[in-house]
Length: 156
Image 1 (cartoon, rainbow, N blue to C red):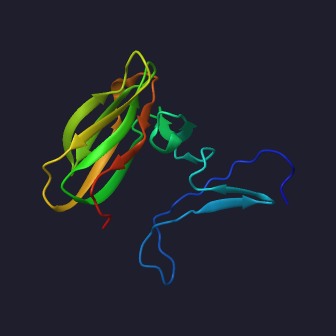
Image 2 (image 1 turned 120 degrees about the vertical axis):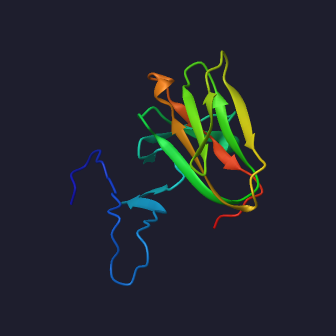
Image 3 (image 1 turned 90 degrees about the vertical axis):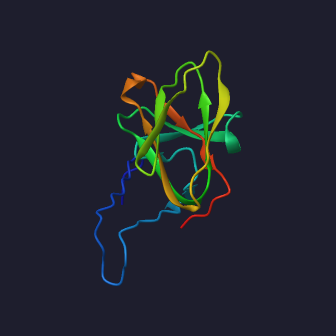
Protein backbone atom coordinates (compact mmCIF):
# COMPACT_ATOMS: atom_id res chain seq x y z
CA UNK A 1 0.00 0.00 0.00
CA UNK A 2 2.88 2.39 -0.72
CA UNK A 3 2.33 5.54 -2.73
CA UNK A 4 3.70 5.59 -6.26
CA UNK A 5 7.31 6.82 -6.38
CA UNK A 6 10.75 5.96 -5.05
CA UNK A 7 11.14 4.19 -1.73
CA UNK A 8 14.12 2.98 0.26
CA UNK A 9 14.11 -0.59 1.53
CA UNK A 10 16.66 -1.46 4.21
CA UNK A 11 17.23 -4.94 5.58
CA UNK A 12 19.10 -5.04 8.88
CA UNK A 13 20.70 -8.18 10.28
CA UNK A 14 20.05 -8.23 14.03
CA UNK A 15 22.46 -11.09 14.83
CA UNK A 16 19.63 -12.95 16.53
CA UNK A 17 18.35 -16.44 15.89
CA UNK A 18 14.76 -17.52 15.66
CA UNK A 19 13.24 -20.85 16.62
CA UNK A 20 14.68 -23.62 14.48
CA UNK A 21 17.65 -21.63 13.13
CA UNK A 22 21.25 -22.43 13.91
CA UNK A 23 22.94 -19.16 12.93
CA UNK A 24 22.34 -15.45 12.35
CA UNK A 25 22.98 -15.27 8.59
CA UNK A 26 20.51 -13.57 6.28
CA UNK A 27 20.39 -14.40 2.57
CA UNK A 28 18.83 -12.17 -0.06
CA UNK A 29 18.35 -13.45 -3.60
CA UNK A 30 16.23 -10.72 -5.15
CA UNK A 31 13.64 -8.03 -4.52
CA UNK A 32 10.31 -8.07 -6.31
CA UNK A 33 8.09 -4.99 -6.44
CA UNK A 34 5.06 -5.35 -8.63
CA UNK A 35 6.27 -6.46 -12.06
CA UNK A 36 9.88 -5.35 -11.36
CA UNK A 37 12.53 -7.81 -10.18
CA UNK A 38 16.06 -6.88 -9.14
CA UNK A 39 18.42 -9.85 -8.74
CA UNK A 40 21.09 -9.70 -6.03
CA UNK A 41 23.86 -9.01 -8.59
CA UNK A 42 22.11 -5.98 -10.13
CA UNK A 43 24.17 -2.79 -10.08
CA UNK A 44 21.29 -0.88 -8.47
CA UNK A 45 21.88 -2.68 -5.17
CA UNK A 46 23.84 -0.73 -2.56
CA UNK A 47 25.56 -3.25 -0.31
CA UNK A 48 26.11 -1.29 2.94
CA UNK A 49 27.63 1.67 1.11
CA UNK A 50 29.18 -0.36 -1.73
CA UNK A 51 27.82 0.66 -5.12
CA UNK A 52 28.01 -1.27 -8.36
CA UNK A 53 29.40 0.32 -11.51
CA UNK A 54 29.48 -1.08 -15.02
CA UNK A 55 32.84 -0.96 -16.76
CA UNK A 56 34.12 -3.00 -19.69
CA UNK A 57 37.59 -3.33 -18.09
CA UNK A 58 36.18 -4.99 -14.98
CA UNK A 59 35.99 -8.75 -14.54
CA UNK A 60 32.45 -9.67 -15.58
CA UNK A 61 31.79 -6.11 -16.75
CA UNK A 62 31.26 -4.46 -13.36
CA UNK A 63 32.90 -3.70 -10.02
CA UNK A 64 31.88 -2.36 -6.61
CA UNK A 65 33.26 0.76 -4.98
CA UNK A 66 32.95 2.54 -1.64
CA UNK A 67 34.21 5.79 -0.21
CA UNK A 68 32.77 5.16 3.26
CA UNK A 69 35.30 5.42 6.07
CA UNK A 70 36.39 1.93 7.11
CA UNK A 71 34.43 0.21 4.33
CA UNK A 72 35.56 -3.38 4.01
CA UNK A 73 34.82 -6.71 2.37
CA UNK A 74 35.89 -10.11 3.65
CA UNK A 75 36.03 -13.65 2.34
CA UNK A 76 36.84 -16.83 4.23
CA UNK A 77 38.34 -19.45 1.93
CA UNK A 78 40.38 -22.65 1.98
CA UNK A 79 43.52 -22.66 -0.17
CA UNK A 80 47.16 -21.64 -0.50
CA UNK A 81 46.79 -18.44 -2.52
CA UNK A 82 44.27 -15.82 -3.53
CA UNK A 83 44.21 -12.97 -6.02
CA UNK A 84 42.67 -9.55 -5.43
CA UNK A 85 41.08 -8.19 -8.63
CA UNK A 86 40.73 -4.42 -8.69
CA UNK A 87 41.16 -1.39 -10.90
CA UNK A 88 43.54 1.55 -10.69
CA UNK A 89 42.45 4.97 -11.85
CA UNK A 90 42.78 8.74 -11.41
CA UNK A 91 40.12 9.00 -8.71
CA UNK A 92 40.71 5.87 -6.61
CA UNK A 93 42.10 5.65 -3.08
CA UNK A 94 44.11 3.16 -1.02
CA UNK A 95 43.13 -0.34 0.10
CA UNK A 96 44.55 -2.19 3.11
CA UNK A 97 44.90 -5.96 2.73
CA UNK A 98 44.78 -8.23 5.78
CA UNK A 99 44.94 -12.03 5.78
CA UNK A 100 44.15 -13.92 8.98
CA UNK A 101 44.32 -10.66 10.97
CA UNK A 102 47.87 -10.00 9.71
CA UNK A 103 48.35 -6.77 7.78
CA UNK A 104 49.87 -7.52 4.35
CA UNK A 105 50.14 -4.11 2.66
CA UNK A 106 48.37 -0.98 1.46
CA UNK A 107 47.56 -1.01 -2.25
CA UNK A 108 47.59 2.44 -3.85
CA UNK A 109 44.84 2.30 -6.48
CA UNK A 110 45.61 5.72 -7.97
CA UNK A 111 46.89 5.80 -11.55
CA UNK A 112 46.88 8.31 -14.42
CA UNK A 113 44.63 6.09 -16.56
CA UNK A 114 42.02 3.47 -15.73
CA UNK A 115 43.55 0.00 -15.81
CA UNK A 116 43.01 -3.46 -14.34
CA UNK A 117 45.21 -4.62 -11.47
CA UNK A 118 45.66 -8.10 -9.99
CA UNK A 119 47.63 -8.77 -6.81
CA UNK A 120 48.49 -12.33 -5.77
CA UNK A 121 48.90 -13.42 -2.15
CA UNK A 122 50.49 -16.87 -2.10
CA UNK A 123 52.49 -19.14 0.13
CA UNK A 124 49.60 -19.64 2.53
CA UNK A 125 49.19 -22.90 4.42
CA UNK A 126 46.63 -25.33 3.00
CA UNK A 127 43.97 -24.26 5.50
CA UNK A 128 41.09 -21.84 6.07
CA UNK A 129 41.99 -18.16 5.73
CA UNK A 130 40.13 -14.87 5.84
CA UNK A 131 41.12 -11.98 3.58
CA UNK A 132 39.82 -8.51 4.39
CA UNK A 133 40.03 -5.53 2.02
CA UNK A 134 39.52 -2.21 3.84
CA UNK A 135 39.40 1.39 2.63
CA UNK A 136 42.47 3.15 4.02
CA UNK A 137 41.86 6.42 5.90
CA UNK A 138 44.48 8.06 3.64
CA UNK A 139 42.13 7.76 0.65
CA UNK A 140 40.72 11.25 1.16
CA UNK A 141 37.37 11.42 -0.61
CA UNK A 142 38.37 8.75 -3.16
CA UNK A 143 36.69 5.32 -3.22
CA UNK A 144 38.35 1.94 -3.29
CA UNK A 145 37.41 -0.60 -5.93
CA UNK A 146 36.83 -4.32 -5.46
CA UNK A 147 36.38 -6.26 -8.69
CA UNK A 148 36.64 -9.73 -7.19
CA UNK A 149 38.74 -12.41 -5.56
CA UNK A 150 40.07 -15.39 -7.50
CA UNK A 151 42.06 -18.51 -6.78
CA UNK A 152 42.07 -22.28 -6.55
CA UNK A 153 40.08 -22.06 -3.34
CA UNK A 154 37.05 -23.65 -1.76
CA UNK A 155 34.61 -21.96 0.57
CA UNK A 156 34.29 -23.59 3.98
